[in-house]
Length: 168
Image (tube, rainbow, N blue to C red; front, side, top):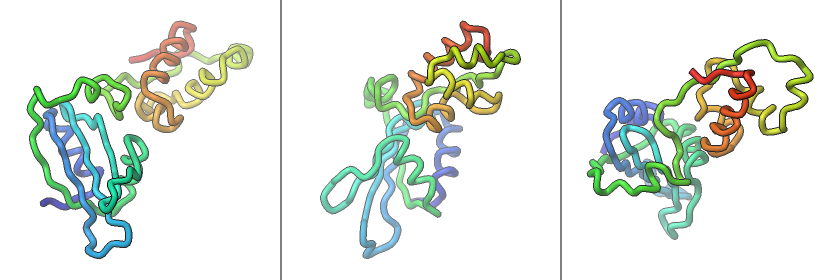
């Protein structure tokens, strides 16, 4: 058993670029709402994250919501086991449950955009464009908008084709 913050845990395992399963449990004994969580890492990247109620197995949080909740906790008690390549589920690598993919380019605004061009964008394109600041990754934009990474990536490619951003 180890104890760290969620951020420290993710940073440490990300550096390894290995496949892991992390089991996290409630630290306090007699907690009113005992819970446990499990994270799956593929190549050092969180692919699946789930938190559930210990007593009845009811799901409390999944994926992005689970990550945000775990990040808010002061510390976590966890155990680690290696996940062999043959144990990695295909959906964990490129399926709908993906939480974070491999490092992606950081979109940047390519040029000053006229108001008429911005007004011609769809609502989703305007939302994504507004968050392109040269520092936010595709994953960060997806988390802020609560959209799948694939949807944000598609919109960014549309904006790139219009010549208003660049993906570096």
